[in-house]
Image (cartoon, rainbow, N blue to C red; front, side, top):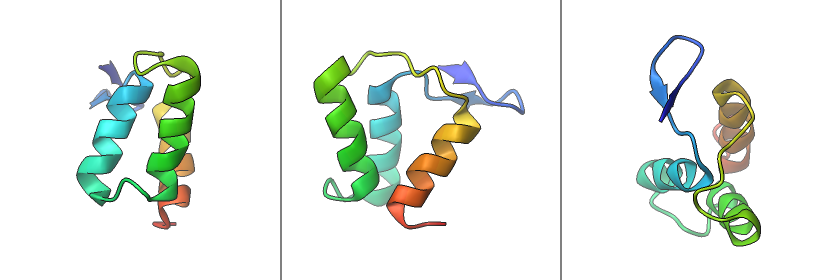
Length: 67
C-alpha cells in the first residue's frame, strides 16, 4: 500500500485496485472492474500504479457510474 493525498493508505498495484473495486461493486462485469482486468491481463496484477490515487478514483468512479 501507498498513501493518498491525506496520508491515508491506498492501493499501490492494479490488483489492489481491482480487489478494492470488486469489494465495493460486487460485480465483475462493471466497466471499472473490466478496465482493471484488461490492464492486469496486459501488465500483471502486481504492476505498480504510477497515477495519483485521486486520479485513479476519478477514473474508476466514473467508469463505475458513481460520478
